[in-house]
Image (tube, rainbow, N blue to C red; front, side, top):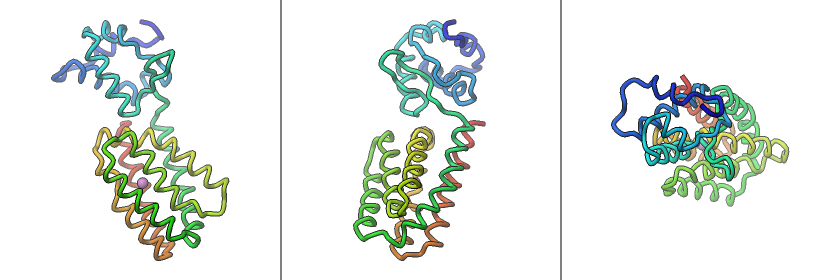
Length: 224
Ligand code: NI
């Protein structure tokens, strides 16, 4: 098989076939991407997969579409679908850095947040509630968090925080696709704005830390 990965063997290893062909292909690929058997950057070509899994191209196309919605694949103009840069280690690292940096940025920002900043944060919470597209929720979540850290008075710290939130977006999309949107923890978001409005740094930080810890624990499960 091309590109060094034996998709036919992967197909043969799957035990009971799920109800539909596309589900079968999707489950096999997802498991192999998550446990690292198919390395990041590996191209997933429709014809090769259809032959390996002994299905037609339509279910393969549907499976790839689903995997893209879960942020496990990227579509590139020349290579087509390739396996995204995603791993248990990278995810754990992303949360570790968020856990270290965001409370510092939030604590420094709280005394300087304006009514406008807090209004914007509240608007973003409503936007998230109304947004039907999981792909857009990651961006709204990032903008929400950044609106609370923006007054930290440290452009470098704020840039580092934003960089991690951008990397986190991929994992968030994956988890939303798997678990549903109630995992956005909007209650935490509301509590963070309330504590920030009351200038209660201790309360605000403890909500944020729990928010990140719970997400990290939830997320770690997908890679085991
Ligand atoms: Ni959040």
